[in-house]
Every structure is written in structure tokens, then in C-alpha cells.
Image (cartoon, rainbow, N blue to C red; front, side, top):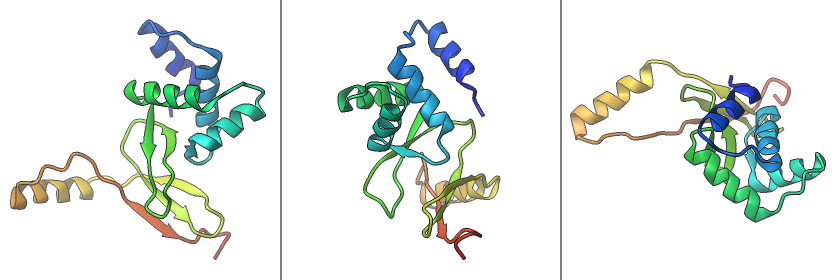
Length: 141
């Protein structure tokens, strides 16, 4: 998992300013146990006494996505887009339909095999995919 200092160092090295809003947004996303919507991010920032309006938050989210620091995800059961810090490898999500907790899960090997099969059999190049497992966590069963 990337640490705050590592992310900020990457940005500084690239010549980008570390504003209070930018730093606080990264901190909130790193500390969150689940991907946040823009509204959830604004609420968290206000809870930290960091003034944040929608325009600033969306502008920063766009910047952080372009820098490869944050990724945008949209769960199939929701209409809202959510954001989380990119932690290296591609991962999927376990979503509890009871308490709404989201956990990351990494599946290695098999999905890449299927992507190659799709390319070979259909000539379709997979650029990205999402996989969500929806159910009930141990606490909600």
C-alpha cells in the first residue's frame, strides 16, 4: 500500500504543488475503509475542518486520476461513482449487501488467461474489466 509521504513525494518530484485540499483528499482516501463518492469525500474533508467545494473536489479527483494515484469505480448496484487510491495491482471487490462494507480481493492468473482466450477466439482486446462479488459478510450472515 502506498503511503502518504510516497504519494506526495511523487507529486513534488513532478513539479506539482501540494495544496492543503490535495493533501487532505489523499489522506482521507488512504484512511477510508471503502471507496468514497465525491459527496462522501466532501463530508470527510469538512469533518477534518478542510474547506472543500464541489468544484475543487472534482478538479482534484480528475487530476489525481490522470496522475494514476486515484481510480474511479462504479459498482453495478449503485449509480454513484466512487474513488480509491491505486494500490498497485488490479483488484476486485467484495460488497456486503447488509452493512455495505467493501473489501478488496485480488485474483491472480485465471482472469488473465480468460482475457487471452477472448482475444484469441474473438479478436476482442480487453482493456479493462470489473468484477464484484455481492453477498453478506460474516457479521451480516
